[in-house]
Image 1 (cartoon, helix red, strand yellow):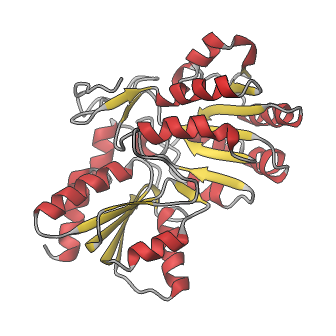
Image 2: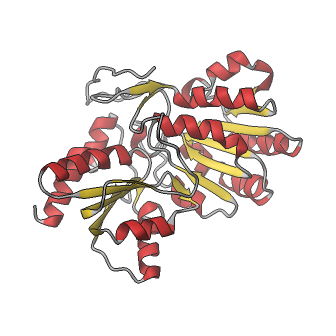
Length: 333
């Protein structure tokens, strides 16, 4: 059941396992867990592994209902990936949970070779994407999409909200090969209607009919871009949003169709500007010979300090208000 929760003081760094409050929008608690439990009912071969982060990656309900199918390998992300690959070789579908910074930095070679190279049925769900963590550079996965999309045979996803997170958790067992998915945990906003919206692998989702500004976004930045769209529409600057939950395979054809309907493009991502969504968009436009003014809204090329999510998003230009400010200045409105 979706609900709306109260605000949390913007200046306080969250305690371990806490999630930022959702303000002004319906939210859902632990959508990954709900989708995971539905997948487990359909797939008795599904197992879950975690690197001592079960409580903080929303798999405690699975552990309670299926203790014989749950494995905690301890604080050892490389072992997590290798055990998952081994379980895949004997017919299991292995869901792994840890934080994105640990999966992408510490277990990178193991995901590439033990899993993707061998086409293993391993699904890595990586929490604390980008600035979702207030615990600084050691816990903020700000370059994981660039790293993961460079691995062959790997599907890479960055869901926008509770609706897409639950859908990915449920559908992942049916996807062939290895998956890397950014994990949205605890209290997650509901941006898309679960009754009508369906995440499709390799397909972008368009909101709007073109106009002066075309927002291209992934992950949690889509919520902010939709809010920015409403702002600019109300001020006589019609805009549209191209949401891409799939980083790999990327919907290049859909992006080009979308780009043809707008005057300018704003790419927004909870990731460094290098190697992520912005790089995909620039490559697609360049290779198609399409010339559009383009603004990148992303995390700067630096390790980020500690702070609350609200403070970090605003400080580094990822909040809706800061997006509107930058785009307004850019278009001269």
